[in-house]
Amino acid sequence: MRQKRRDCIWGYIFIAPQVLGLLLFSVIPIISVFYYSFCKWDAISDPVFIGIQNYITEFHDPVFYKSILNTLKYSLIYIPGNVVIALLIAAAIQGIKGKVGYRLVFFLPIVASSVAVSMIWLWILEPNGGILNYFLECIKLGRVNLLGDTRTVMITIGLIGLWCNLGYNIVIYIAGLEGVPRVYYEAAMVDGASAWTRFIRITLPMMSPTIFFTFIMTMIASFKVFDLAYVMTEGGPAKASYVFVMHIYEYGFKLFKMGQSCAAAVIFFIALLVITVFQNIMSKRWVNYES
Image (cartoon, rainbow, N blue to C red; front, side, top):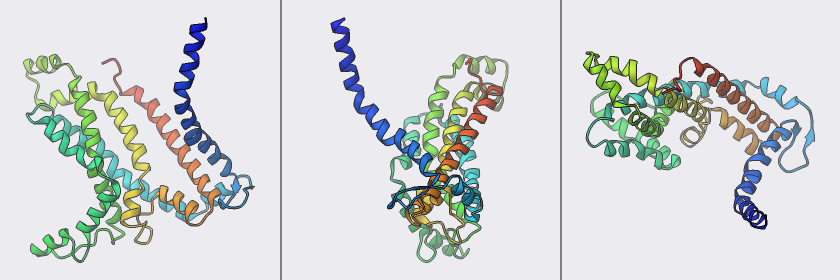
């Protein structure tokens, strides 16, 4: 009993830093956000409880809806690309020589700092002296200002975000493909199934748990977009790239409306939670966990 008690004490000592860090940097801040969302607070003076007024203000703020629309535009590019294109690339390079080299090439942009990547793309897309416009002028197509046009700015940021993060899903898909038993493919080839039929009838069903995981993680990542849009455009032009996390940041740390910023963060959390739960329920219809 004494030895068991001693082991218990040492166990609690070893997990104490992790538990303390979780409480200080996750649990307490989350609870605080919910509380401050019901307060009028400028992060300097004492918070004043005002009920649901911050939520009412948010839902009557046109900028709130603008940020949601821009985030959805980004997601419509980012999610299908990171789920579908990544799977197709992984399937294409999974069985070829030099697979490790291809995997490294696709994964490299993820390792790079998002701020550094944003600055490089700013230099490439610069309307006056950028590399892109230099080549366009060389082939007599004229200059473009992709980040300065309200019609193209979110498409451009979405494609850059896709390029940055595509490699993560590719690596996950390659790992999943390696877990699919080869005997299924061999049996299908004996029956005369084409490569496309094998992909539809074998690869997709067997990879459905991995596809579901990458879809959920990609969806959450797309809704959290901030760094690319902030560094490259700061929400412009005319708030055409003003995304939801930027809305939370601006109200909290620029306008010092910390209560309204917390309300927006709570709305963001609840929206992600509802979408994730819904996707989890719907996944039972198409995800094959028995494989």
